[in-house]
Image (cartoon, rainbow, N blue to C red; front, side, top):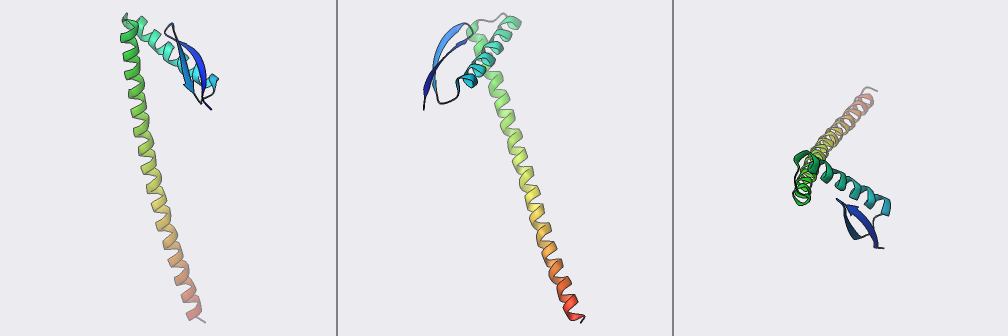
Length: 105
């Protein structure tokens, strides 16, 4: 169920409608506010410019994490394919061993 949560970001009040827990939303807002503040202090940029730079930084981090996740998915798929191949080889080896044991008697 959606609820309204009030947060402060870069000194401005916002009311957000979300199904997330209040503590989580407040943590996100605090993170963004802190990032905007750091950028503003370092560059002496306006709040709007700092917010845009903050958004760019967060988007950059997001896309890098998406790429990392995709690389991990590919790696896991390769490992699973390898495991399947090894299981098939093991099964074939067991059948051959059984065949040899039966033929040797």
